[in-house]
Image (cartoon, one colour):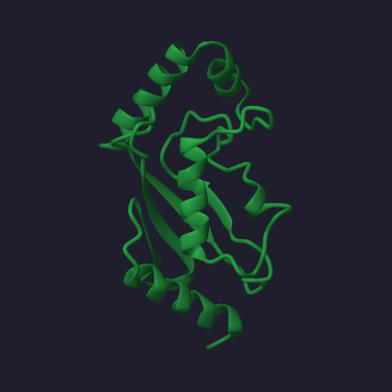
Length: 150
């Protein structure tokens, strides 16, 4: 069944495949276009460098008028990622626009890894370490990077 949401998701997928998006990839599950698996590579020159982080994006028929639900499947230690993998990211909440596509979402998440926002923490311990003990924060992040290789 073709709906505006499903047609848009196919366009998003074709665009994601056609562009050279460094460090991000994603595709719908073979049996359900409404659920996508994605991967973000940790940005260079950050504690997340060399990490391969898996995410799941879940869409409903209101997309692109409403954002998908996005969760890390990989364990994360980040000020803006809840313990359950959900993200605190403005474009997935109050700053959503239908002009954003899957590539824009993944790029924004990758950018968040590079530039955390500790003033609006989803993970208080990570935010406190980021602000007060960067060495320990980096050590904890590196643990999740190593786990991401398994």
